Image (cartoon, rainbow, N blue to C red):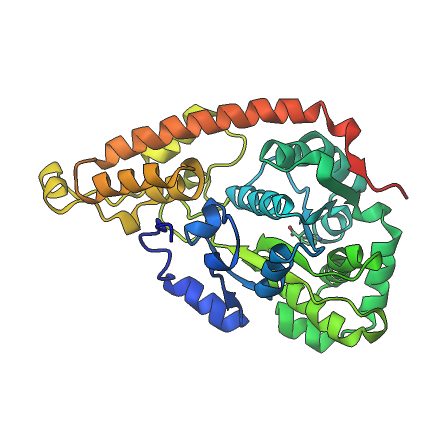
Length: 361
Ligand code: TRP
């Protein structure tokens, strides 16, 4: 078996072990899937639901789909969304029918974004960004929630299958916008099965697991339509550069978004929490505490594709040959290459939006 570079990811940090336990998730095993991608090999993908059904469909070359939704709330992408796109691209390569929807009804109901504004953001930024990050536009089906009558109708049918109490127990609270968005999302998740019943996998942030649970409950109560319960797959968060669990816009100094001007991104990297020791002597003697190093984590999750290269950096840093300053220089260099390429690919993808496969209604 290939060596898995994962100095600490195979032993899940407490937070993730707790998530698995609290939500009743299935731990992800990269060996179940052929040609695992970087995120799968390195323990960044950590859990899911009903993953084996998808592994089996891939192995037996049976039809299945992969679907996710874009929330067009602003004109930036989070590193978490980049991971979702990479998983979409992986399943697409493994033969999945691929669906991307723009959650414009949800952004209206939950965030007050107008449908026009949502459309503009999706067409000018989000969809081109997804293509720039590796989605094959020719093999992807796109739609806007607001235009998909089938999805809206499913949402209304599903509304009858749940109670307010159940909703509250899954989501913690229940405001009208949330309820509307959740039933529509269940409609999205099952929509591809209206044509043909088949397994489907939904890569999303683990914060979306309540939607998956709700949809699975709805499936078990919608006998007439005989849907396959959806599978899901979750990635860990990209940690904030200050060492906290999740990169978040609320702490702009330690959050890098796509796109971001490279000088600003590098400044943030230089201020990141590292595993370097207090003095150079100590560092040379004991080596870095790689498991505490946010720059290494960024390299591991996003900036270095090649396992051997990452492995070598890990070794040099862990042994104290490489300093945290050198690691930061390297990360900055890689970030610059990545961001420059992303912006160029984004420009190119923008020119292709008029040719995409939007479902005609
Ligand atoms: N709720 C998702 C978000 O906040 C967007 C979304 C809508 C979605 N429909 C979906 C995600 C279906 C996955 C599957 O980002």
